[in-house]
Length: 407
Length: 175
Image (cartoon, rainbow over all chains, first blue to last red):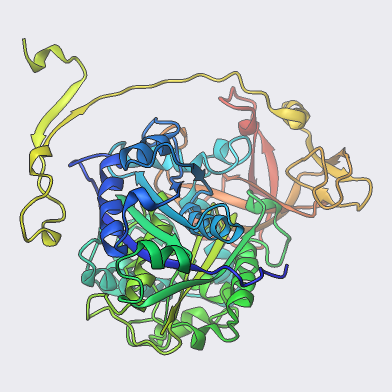
């Protein structure tokens, strides 16, 4: 796959996030989308009437029992009669939506795209019902019927990693500590917390080896990003070249068998995210990334569970297989470390309203590259490049997107 | 007259601005903080077809464990599929002995809503003898949780009791 003539380029003009929380009873999905959209429009200095196309990003029709919710979001922000498309890929939905905006603009179908996403996952239904809805995103004939659900699947992946590489529970607990701590500097985050490895280890066992604090959050919230070509931005964005210019320079997507049982065994089998490697290879080739640990200033990683972040480091090429635990102990991925990850707090600290999550990663990388993040979580810019990784299922759909600052 | 007419009403309340930190000039939505919550119950029943892999479930009831084999590449898919995804050849049924090795597991103390299983329960990934891929099911009759080890031999066991789904006609247990 040789990507693209570079005649067209795609830029990130603005972003917005409506607060992630355990419950946003002050409104529902359409209200949160409105808030995220208004923030993104103000941030980009553009008017909705000039934007040509929208992409809807949400995962499940079950959480709200509202099919075609995108039609509602789209008309709420005055986009009718302009075109809209919905993208869905489980946890990767937001990442896919960013990739979709890139593809639509690169193809010339439009010069500008607003992408909005949300999920109503908080306390709208009890958490055992929420886990049931999420379990429906695994094979309902073969896996769900034996009481398979996502924490249990990921726990089996992590046990395989522990067996193969000697990875320790305390090592992935460190990811939870880091991400909850990073969230303390993000006022939009669901679960900021100053905790220790011991707190994580002592929290209630959900599914061995994952304790309560190893898990990401069921959150309410929304996020929005606005993309356009340079020509469009020059004409329609009040802040073009007044704010730092941020370009989408890479996107990759990979997949794996829905059921872990079918994946090539024994390797990468159920230990690694094969699809994530494919996604990263594509995105890195597009952006010219050779050594990810040096070539990125920050990276939002899909920390659905703390151990997932460690395994993702390996599959994203931040380190060799089995090295992620020891590197986490050395603080390589902490704020101030070699490659700070999940500066926003990630899915564990910021929150995980699925359709918004991948977009919120994009908003975080945008803020970091523009040096607009809270001073306590702002990274140092060297490569002037940030990455984001989101995946659905147990790495069934994986998306890696890359933003770069152009000075 | 009034809200008592609304049978599914759960509550009416005044919401706080969750992003007050972003609104130093005041709450832009101050006119819209009165919130109503109602109950909405939806139930569905499906008449679900178990596809071309139905024979697997039919034979489970006869205490036989079937997989599918690709006549072209020879790969045996433990979770049966009528089409080999490696070479797009139509597969054939192949009976396996039902013995295998535990490759990974998890122990759950939490169960999603509609699943009827006592906690803790063990989900297992098993490499069945004669198969090239894994199979996912519960591990039962393991005695003590501490005794569960990756690499231990396991076997398919079959129920003689009524079950709520054909997949539950079997489980794994230590061999």
